[in-house]
Length: 486
Ligand code: GAP
Image 1: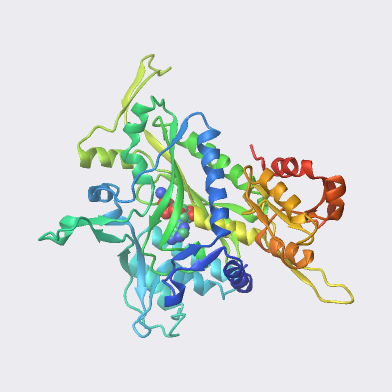
Image 2 (image 1 turned 180 degrees about the vertical axis):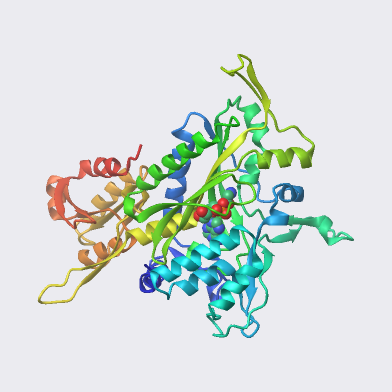
């Protein structure tokens, strides 16, 4: 269930330890835009790399691309985003605050008992599925839902609000501003669709095959909340898998299972995940399911698996007047002839990188009570799987004297080409350990006077806090073993 304290603690921790800062903080921030600090950027990069390798390196038939953020404006006409990429929203006339209708209702039911809350959510989902805005307004009025800011029930009608950001392209203002209008992409997927034949032909790809991409996407979210859960500028990791028409159900099921396996490989327990199959489908989909994670705010979507039919490629064929067909030379056992020309169907996996960062932070963040009779002691620790941790190894000379730093730096030089290391001389060893716990470093090594004599060091394991004496020459292997994932 919701845990506001945990969320606030996590936000504070992310700032204090250099994971996530509010954008333009010195100017009081910019709503729902965030910057990653020195450890956040490493965590994010590790997740992105792992996803990229899982997709493109571990599958024969998936390749990557990196398409531009700006695309021809007709792309968004064809994809349906200009007409359909909108959310029903409602304004409170007193507070002048605007809400996404589903968020307002979800917030309202958080304070109800489970049965009543579920009944309202079911009603809401049915009304959303039917685009019944009058019904949604009635649901809000009948339950006397109040504005969370102003506390009144004085609502406008429910209306649609397009989520795309637009800007102008080129230096010369056109007579008609719409002539120069381009959008910041609201999903990376369209860059894949418009390059489908470029990749298929240049890579001699045979269906079924996939194209993967990571990159920024932008949405003018009406109510952006939940830290880096819902942002206006965020990063997606998307893969479009092109399949023969009629086989989409089989591939949809395959990718649901495959993606859940990937999530479990992050070291997150299965009971923190669930699937949520959609009733209301996006304009392009014939089946869709979310992988939801148990965030501090409750179970919420982290990834979507969508069977997008041949909607996007068909639309691009129509709007661009360029053929989007694939020739399938394989023999159809039913007719004994080649499958021939067709527009492929697409199964998409789409995961938010920032949301995955938030999921991993939520899962990893723990406060352990290590108090003894003599003193109170809490340990804040981020228990990331070692391969995802921003820093893999911290190296500490016990003192700044007696040649200990030289030996410590020797170990640093040996290890840093292989993985990210951190060196520190300052403060007592215990304090240095705790600082590394707080950023999730799985191993700390202390170099002491015995190390000078017998070239052994103490390695301390983050989760168990156990320390063992090992040959210095073994340290690199110990860390390498713990971070190898495939
Ligand atoms: N191409 C399909 C697509 O974009 P989506 O369900 O709208 O589907 C996919 O988005 C994923 O992108 C979501 O599961 C979520 O992880 C992430 N995402 C969407 N909107 C976001 C936002 N405003 N802030 C952060 N992540 C977001």
